[in-house]
Amino acid sequence: MRILIVEDESSISGFLKEGLEEEGFAVDLADNGRKGLELAMDFVNEYDIILLDWMLPGVSGIEICRSVRKVNQQVPIIFLTAKDTIDDTVFGLENGANDYLKKPFAFEELLARIRVLMRRTTGEQSVFKIRDIKMDLAVYEVTKGGKEIILTQKEFALLEFLLRNKGKVCRRTRIMEKVWDVHFDKDTGVIDVFINGLRKKLDDEDSESLIQTIRGVGYRINEDE
Ligand code: CA
Image (cartoon, rainbow, N blue to C red; front, side, top):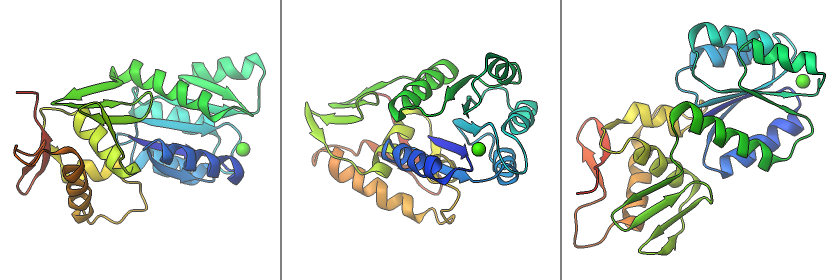
C-alpha cells in the first residue's frame, strides 16, 4: 500500500513516514504544496491514500485536494489540520476530503482512520488465510500453522499486496509501484530478493511454492486448492 504525505513541518512528516513504514506502507513525502501537487497528479492512481496538510507553502492542501478529485474520485484523502473551526472542516469535506485530523493527533488514531477509509473504499479485508498461513493486518501478524512468522517490513507489504490480489497475476512494475516508494530506482530485480525471502519463510519443503512465478511478467498467489 502506498501513501503520499504532503506536510511542510518536518517533525510531523518524519514521524508519520517512520510510523507508516513500520506498518508496511510505501511512503512518498512532499514538504511543500507544489511538490505535493506534482506527486499527487503523477501517481494519483498508485496511491492508496493521501494525507494533506491544510496550510502549505506554494499550493494549499485544499487546492491539491480539488485537483486530485478532478481526476480521481476514489483515493481516500485525509486532511491534517491545525485549523479546527467547524467551517474549515466542512469546507474541506465539501471539497473532496474523506476525513480530517486535528493536530496534534496520536499516530494510532491516524492509523485507525486510514484502515477504516481503506476498508470503505476498497472493501479492504483485514485477515487473509491461505494454506496454513494467516495474515492479520489489524495486529500486523503473520502465522504459519499457528506459529508467528517474523517478516521484514517489505516482505510484509509484498505479501499483503499479493494476497489482496489473490488469483491474479501481479506484474512486476505494479508491485514496484505499490510496495516501493518514489525514491526507489526502477530495478525490479529487488522484488525477486524479497520473494525468495518470503518463500523461505512460508513454503513447505515438499510442496509447490505459495508464490508462483509467471515468467517475464510477475508473480501470483493462487486461490486455495
Ligand atoms: Ca503546514
